[in-house]
Image (spheres, rainbow, N blue to C red):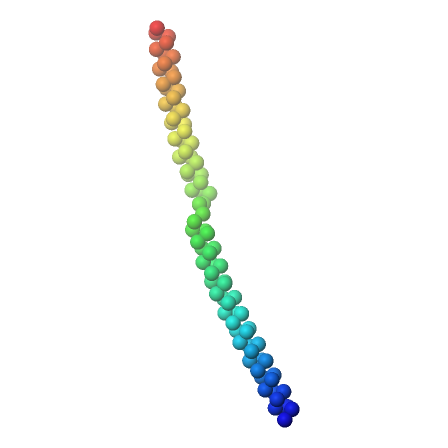
Length: 84
């Protein structure tokens, strides 16, 4: 009789442990999938170095053009003042 009770208790414990372990592995798998999705979203949202360099070159060209226009206007003012 003792062996029967002991077998029932051990079987119950092993069953509960198996259920808990199965649930933990399922949760680990779910977290792994979420982590991969997060990595993909982060990589998609960030800008690459090539894009930064292209944007910076456009910005520098724009600033350069502005300074050239200012320089041209200053040259015109200086020329007008020489004529007067």
